[in-house]
Length: 203
Image 1 (cartoon, rainbow, N blue to C red):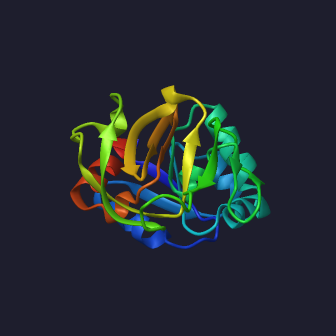
Image 2: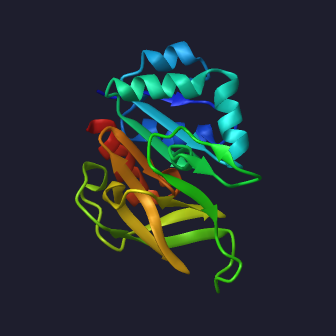
């Protein structure tokens, strides 16, 4: 199934994700209409910016409930960057905000005491923790592109399929049943990122 509904929560960055998905063979339908999300066979939830603004944008159009409904029916969904963060229960950016609650855990800011530059911007290596179709043909230590100041503290270690080391080790890719998420930007990660998107499209 190569038809992908690309959710527009009003945070931008959709065009580059859409082009990347199309380049690996997906038929992409971009929408902010909750009813169209409810009819999706596969969903991609990209996002940039602040956690709270992103969730508010989803709630404004009923996209939050639509996503929960399709996920409960077993529809595969991939969250990208803030889209991955939104999968969790709580985000602490600009105050505490409820996420979609599809995964256990909290999105927190990098500690000021870390000896790394914040935001985490640029190329870094993924450390694959366990086999997952999303990472088929992706080597442990492959480089992908990051750009974020908050990170996900996964409440269930079994959800974590890859980590990254940036002052601390944390989840950069997750999966629970039909819910997937990547903190990095596959659309900016060249061949590795396109392979990950292709794996999702073709699964």
